[in-house]
Image (spheres, rainbow, N blue to C red):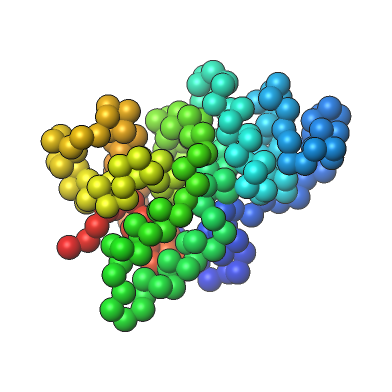
Length: 235
């Protein structure tokens, strides 16, 4: 993919713009949203949750966070059996819920400044992510071969960055980014097995992205390549 030049893509980088959608909620779900916005019923079905995720309402960070909380309790097979469009919508919820608006665009601007410390800027950006977001559903899909094969690069990158931020919140962004730059460091690290599993998940996502045809290009914002969010500290 060539560098993005359309203004709409900036919205996507700030956490993904959703198309409008009418009459897609069940009566009970829609009524609950109207009364207690951004509340989402914990008993909502996967289908109802997908309707919300694919609507303008899904672009609300609090709604996205609630949907991910509820999806965490669904069976993995309920998620992996979804269409690639719905799987991508779930991945996009991670960016919407975890990445503060403007964080990526600000990083893309700052990192191109003369003398900028790219490692420190990426670590600072990762540190701004909301690490309280439930990423269970995201990790299920990042382990799903169809999702890895068909989801867009930007959706995979932002979802993976949220996973790294979750680990960074516990051990520090510097530790995570050093390991991403040199995965062999993980063996002698003090990371828990769960944390190692999360990082290995992201390493695999990067491998999949890197294996895509060269003509697909790499997604960039200005001179900033999005996968640099995941590649770790540069020497």
